[in-house]
Amino acid sequence: MDEYALIMRHEDGTKIASPEQMEIWMKQTMDWIGGIAAQNKFVSGTGLLFDGAKVVKHGGVVTDGPFGAIKETIGGFIVVRAESPDEAADFAKGCPVLQGDGNTMEVRRIAKRDGTH
Amino acid sequence: MAQQELIPHLFRTEYRKIISVLCRRFGFDHVEIAEDIASDTFATAAQTWGLNGAPANPIAWLYSVAKNKARNHLQRSSVFDGKVVPEVKYTTTELHEYDIDLSPQNISDSQLQMMFTICHPSIPPEAQIGLSLRILCGFGIDEIAEAFLTNKETINKRLYRAREKLREEEIRIEFPGLSEIDKRLENVLMTIYLLFNEGCYSVSQNEVLRKDLCFEAIRLCEMLIDNKSTDKPPVNALLALMYFHASRFDARINKNGEMVLYDDQDTTLWNQDMITKGGYFLHRSATGESLSKYHLEASIAYWSTQKQDTTEKWENILQLYNRYLQIEYSPIAALNRTYALSKVNGKEVAITEAEKLKLDHNQFYFVLLGELYTSIDKEIAKKHLEKAYSLAKTTADKHVIQQKIDQLPN
Image (cartoon, rainbow over all chains, first blue to last red; front, side, top):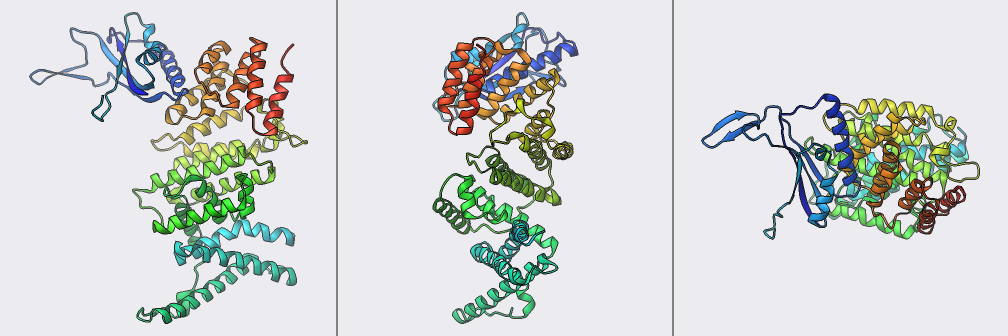
């Protein structure tokens, strides 16, 4: 069994949802994660806040927020255990982020730290 | 209190105090001596009180007899040591050096330190529970054997090995350092939690014994709360959780000694006093930064004390299980979460999620599937319940499942 990162990618991070919408998404996200955890396949979860976000560029230039010419941004990621990339992708399909048109989930196997990958 | 009840009662409350104080004084190396002296004290009490009647202050009487026995032991062993190892200069022959401190403060400290010693990560959990029952709860070997549904030899061996291990590791009877206390406390809480669960779900049919296990777990947890250095949020959460569950004990068993499921329980039999206590400790647990699994479980247990089936109740329970499972997975939590999901999002959604759980050797998995299918497809429901029946180990469980099969709509 390998570990996979399921990365939530928002097409346009500048869109701001209403608090009510946020609450619904929050609950759906918790149900999604709970469903994975109920299969004993959940490892960890990390949400990423926009508050105080910075982008550091070549030459040490620092700007506020992750948005410039490219609006796409990462909302967070969870790490799961899965038998195969397909199973990991099946988990990703349930993420409520995908309700947003243009949003995607990136599924990446996590390198083991024993040199075998 | 009648004479025949007095000694067992005092045994439950005083045995662990005497043993803890003595053991702390002698060192864990001599734990058996402490156990012997404590047992001896009660044997003497049984004899003397049987003839002359109980003294006016039985507890003071016990303490003073235990003190004398300990003092004699210390004097004897000092004479012995003095002869065998004469180069060791014993200057401690004055009487007060042999005195045993049975002040409330020392009793409380000694008991807690003993708990930390017994719940040491170097010995396996079942040995920690066994030693706790023996030393801190004054259980007999036969009672412990019955609780674990095994024989006395097995328990004796298990406890012997555990004592040896603690000696080998030179575990001292003391409070863990400040930097260590939270980590070590986790272990103590785990043992209390397992002890409580043993009482709730034990395969033993002895209902009185099972309740006793639960109340001993509550008592040990209260000891932690009574001491400032261990009165921490997770300890309060664990106590709340135990009170909430214990509140339903009287409703759990009917007159014929059969299990009554939650949905069928007579709520007037729920112990309101315990529910109130649970609420009090849950409130006290809500400080600090950390959210332990006991906090989540206590919150779930709180909602279970609300019999009414509201959307709010099941929404809350579902979200609590979602978080609980992220901290710690267990099959039973996964099943309960799925049940809550069926209450919030409907049975079809829950069936899809349930079928992903693949708990193919778990009877409760098939009970849940059976229940979810009952109003959808009676034949599939029956198949699942029959599978559950074949997996069930106790007659009580089989009985409950058979009832469900019989109640399936035609």
